[in-house]
Image (cartoon, rainbow, N blue to C red; front, side, top):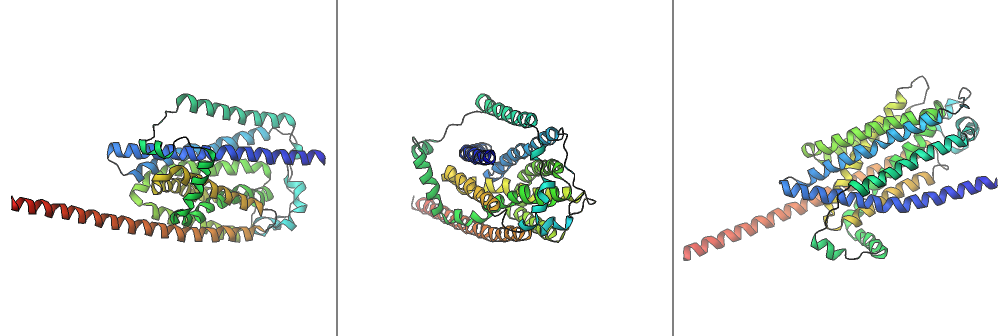
Length: 382
């Protein structure tokens, strides 16, 4: 019992350290891509939103492919374990939307693999992941080009400290557009949290066994990486709103289907169809929402992306916090409500931006007309 508590506390500490490192790294990555995309667009006379979308699409193509390699590595390593778990005696009536905390007690002995994994396999898996992280750091240090901030940005961010960065993140919430985008940003965390936790546990593990989880998530990662690139490129032709509506339709359809579907091991393909469809929605939200943040909050990119990561992570936290207390059906309804609220408020932001651009265009036309009349008047006097 004491060893279990020690492991539990060590996991909490490790997660906290990972979060402290991941937050600034994510904000820096988003800022780098946005600034690079905007500068490339200006140099080549292109629309900055289109280029930034393409940059983020390419990034998420590579980023989401980690779901392929990571899950493939874990599946291959863990499948070497001689003590495979049998799932023949599982009652499938407890799987799917009907899965509740009170009904999972009898399934724990048949759905857990942790006790059968040898220390050698654990060390092998952790060694591979640690080595991959070290290689990633070396690639950034050696090959990533540095970008010089403009003079305005240098003056604004002169000698930034943790306190000033934190205050900047909080001040960003004064922008009503940022507040309106919070539910949609949180939906990204809720959606990924549900898929990685509830779907893999209540659907895949419950009906097929834990050794299928890696392969199902590989399907999610592969589809996500491909469509991240696709939507990053076609958004210049379709526009953001149409793609966000597509993401909403796919997510709503998946949620309704998951509420109605009873997992059956004989329907093996269905277990892969759901993550594939959900990955399309996630690809749209991740790629276009990140790009939208970069262009919408052009003057405060770091604070905006820090807020993005903050609220997305909060969605994760809430999803995992109530994981052991609610039935899967209730969790699906929560995700659905967050999605609908988020999309409605997102459309409000698009409307506000449309009005702003329209007013700016009218002001520009008035200035041009006044300058033309002034030149004409001076010419006639001359």
